Length: 482
Image (cartoon, rainbow, N blue to C red; front, side, top):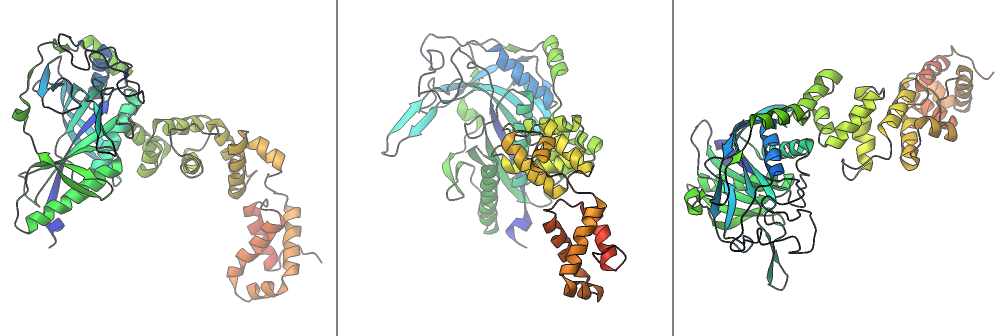
């Protein structure tokens, strides 16, 4: 039995989400990304003596929205705490966070992985401020940019119920989809708006206890989450198989080498010396606010996926693909509302549309209404599927409707029986040997004749009519040129 067969992975994720507020959590500085270093700071977010933080009310609203979306129990009175540690990008020497009385607890995330929906528990959601950013120059110098210090964060801590790196990546993708659907974060992983720390341990299969865990910090892509966990699971399994013991550590993922390496020995909660933040009152969430936010919650991605399966008879995989970005799902909805058949619209969006977009959130050059018009031309038999692809390409370039492109380029399907029969007769007359071979039993030559007729009609012959007439003429039942 291999090491991986002997052990089961137990994974929990701590996902950090930057909230899309215009200003920071405890001051009025801008949260805009990309500003010159240390240009969006003030005495509050740089931790100057004598200043007092004031909670941004929108932060509390956004955090309550995600707590409702994840079916959490929301605490009406949550407490801020000081989390003490020392690092160059933490100007106060402590981070304002929440500890024993967080905003929300005991929720659930529905995660689609391997075409199966998994319910992953959420331990807690708490509010905190982000730290700054250390910039390490090539010459060995390091600099600190505090623009990010004080940007509002929520931390979503999962239960240790994730069982594979693939499921971990799917969980993180689901969190991103939800915060985007709620419009409380852009979820941009490249800019650090969404990142996670992954905790992983192994235990013998069949056992219920937990092994010693390691934490992999600051993973900022779905691929890195999966790759880091794959490596860490293999590393731990090899140690255990050799009779060794896992050391509790915080590790970093080296994406270039595909390995994790030690950052520091893992801290426990008591190492941070948490105590209540004396400069902030409790955060209060009223019943009226919860009622308002509950009524305003949009349809969430997992619910939308299930609706596509139930209402439009799409596969779970296709429904999930359409919902990987809110903009893509909205495009599909608009095309269906304009009359497109759902399955056909889904196929065209996932193949023709996505192949032309670098990012599924980009605006399409072809409107959903124009896509619906193209699909109607196919359904009515006015254009073939092959011609439709050519029409779509020209629509992408010009922004015109399918009808306009087909009219201008003379791309409507030819369905005149007499014209197609004449072209078939000409092909048969030009290829007597192939006709004889076909009639002698080489039925695979049928495709040759179809291709020749399509060539003569520039691909515009109605395929169904062409096939029917061709079969008749090849066995001598149809008209000929004689």
